[in-house]
Image (cartoon, rainbow, N blue to C red):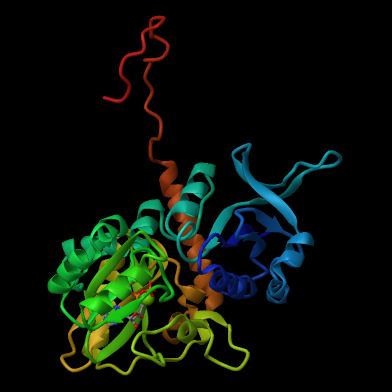
Length: 393
Ligand SMILES: Nc1ncnc2c1ncn2[C@@H]1O[C@H](COP(=O)(O)OP(=O)(O)O)[C@@H](O)[C@H]1O
Ligand SMILES: [Mg+2]
């Protein structure tokens, strides 16, 4: 029997579909002689499903039908192990579906990639692939990650975070002030989304209001920053943990417009498209001078470490095409297609990338086992009747 890996994907996120593509690519790339993969689809309503069709991409053309043909499960901790059980429980026969040794979240976006699913696994006590709760949460928040990066000496663009509440109380004043701080052209993004959803460029105060209104359709906080002129984008992935981390090849993604759109990333790549980030248009290796490549790879590893990431993450940089100046734009703690295509050029096939990710998860679980999680005291046994004092000093 191989290592039992539960691949969790989908989720209540605008990037639900991209996650299905990323996950099924991975499921097909696992070495079947080493792993027993259990695909677990997290539907938009929050329920989890298993079944023979759950790992088959064609089934997702008709999700209601797929769900009808699949079985709903819940994850429970039983005898120290993570078990998938049918829900509602069977009246006759066993409700057991499978046990998993490691959970592999291949999800993108809010409610899943942002530490939520990671926290669920942590509570269940099952080892899981990728960044832990804090790094996942910080990595989803474009403002929080910038603060951490800046504090660690990594170049990022100055920004202004705007809350919807504050903005809607006096939109003209807030937009005016934001424009003065950031300058024009400015770019506005929802603070915690991905896949270029909710993003607009503004060239004046009026445009900035439009952009803020638009971003607030998707999130209750937005980030405004200067739009980089003559933009070139360079992405680089990092694999590892705090102890050791290495950088992949660099890519230059190519978009049809001034900002890379959802379609550029996932749809327009080929006829019949929809192959996920693995087939988006790009120059790989990126056509940049060797010293720029090394600088970006070095910054990527430093940023990965600064946020205490683990597993594989992709770090996306912005470069001013004329001055060559580089800023870290954002981290993706679960990158589209797990960025497997950035590892192949440095000699790491997808199958081995998955091996490394599972090993890192098991290593963290072993290391975590030596941390004390209970602090024995006798405050409850020695308590006098009615003796509840203020809790938590
Ligand atoms: N400061 C900027 N200047 C110019 N273009 C930008 C800037 N920030 C983002 N973009 C463009 O918008 C795209 C999406 O922004 P990004 O911050 O990466 O958000 P997402 O999480 O949605 O990918 C980027 O890939 C890039 O094309
Ligand atoms: Mg991005």
